[in-house]
Length: 290
Image 1 (spheres, rainbow, N blue to C red):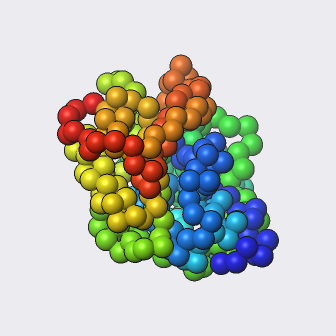
Image 2: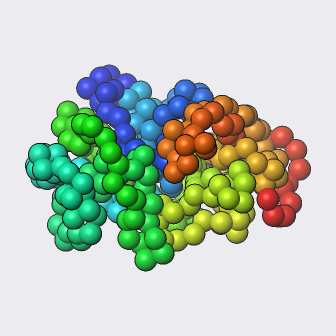
């Protein structure tokens, strides 16, 4: 993907995603190489960093993965049949109402394009842009009272489809997905964040929990990649636990606004951390709780 491909520059995330990186993109991009053989994003979410890198032609190929199959289905459908996804979204936009929202929420389409349109529709019209599922994996966000939500952004969907044509999309655990990382690649980790308090945790992106043991395992994967001199960058909340896990590496704080939260009092500027694996700082982290 060359730097001259200007028509890809306007492609932007399709989904609103809690913890999306639009505000941190300008901080993250300078930490990644100018030329990347393969870009890996094992917690791809809304893909803000990926789309920014694609616009700049920074990688030859990319691998996007996530443990949430519903999210990866959205990208697969847009890549493989964007016309069908657009058609479904136009119909949903035309008939949008609170009754329609709950009918769609309860539906379980079998066709890939309809499943993708369902996810996008619920994301654009659900309460405060949340993506949340219960223990059974069922989406359970209530109706959001938007005046005229933009449900079908056809120009952007077509640009996203073009960007995704040469991208490898995978469902799976971050550790398994990192086994294919090689010299000349770059990895960006954007996991479900460590909670700022015991009552602030939000990790319901899919039915699989992502708690302290998973963060410890991620820190070990981060260390293995960094020790192989692979460029690896990670974002997380600024907590004692996060600082302890990555105290071996260079840590840079960054302030961001977080408008997507179920509680209005929790929306606003918060401090997050960017960890850079190719700039070691000191001794290895100890494995204690946050």
